Length: 233
Length: 240
Image (cartoon, rainbow over all chains, first blue to last red; front, top):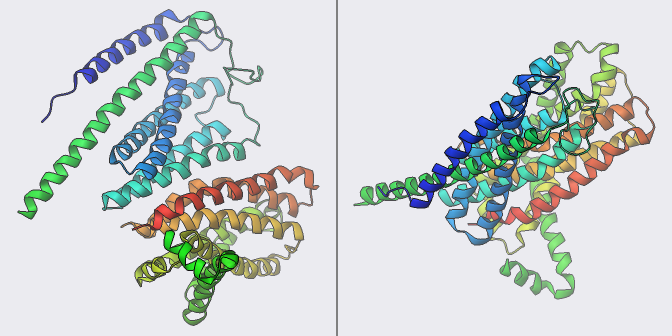
């Protein structure tokens, strides 16, 4: 059993500290939103989780492409680690969105393009994990995973586009959104700071988890190899 | 890939394209000949499609008023379900009887295999659609024979088959292959189904082209994008 690398320990410490600060900023530093009240504080982690989900799936698609070109199993470990993290954070994104939507839109769920796209994205990557589960040969598993990771990522923007015909009620907080959308609000500077810091914190959480998960993947491959060696003796 | 170029080279550099097209044609012809003898693919797709329509008839009570809004949905769900059945079977035949290995030994470019399978899958899907459409028209007394609708069905089927062939080639190599294909395929082809249903509804309700032009564009874009993705990635599915 090899010890946890020093840099990973440092990164974990930084991430934990950042998360504590982020909690402080979200719950105490950022002012209460005038119309929606305290429930608006869901927003900071809701968007940050969605961002990590999208980032994770982008990393999977890129790692898949690199794997197909270079055939280094390391890239496949990146891809699968990233999918697992992305699935968890996309789920957090959807659930926290539902919690926010209940008091503001008066419903847990609407068939809004973003909500539907996030859910389809979740289903796509659950399918990715099922595909891998069904294949025993590690080389083939890595190849098929890479291909499906790319196909899935390409399909997400098209899915979003296709569902957008229905008029959206999801607020666009950043950029030029429709101000009349229910639940839209303007951010004061402390809110913006808390928001940006949440994004940064979640990105650090992603990096830390990715590192741990890749390490776990490598170690379990070694265990697998040792097992084969023992059986062949 | 190098051997593929060599084989085509034998025929002559000038007819490289001809050799490639002949390879595609040979695969399509092989599938048609096998189907003519076994009759297991089209038959099961058709019976299944009819059963789906029958179930919809009772589940949704397809009376005149309901039909006006749900016909396109019923049609596309039927095509999609029957299509999965066909895709799975068409690839499973290759895999089970070792045909795929034989095809891979053939000195042709791997993408010719992909195009061959896409064309034969598309052909089977279109045959099923060509039987379901008049039958649906007959059963429910609606005219489904409009040139616009045929274009939409063609575009939708192409998108469905282009992705479906790629994914079914992967799914048949997995342990859980019978249940895996729909799970892999449906979230990816969702835009095709949404766009095709919307465009079909537009045509059946006699709306002007501008009202559903965006959906046609989306279908064309989807077909082109995923054809590109599939051509690039198919080599990696069948290598080994």
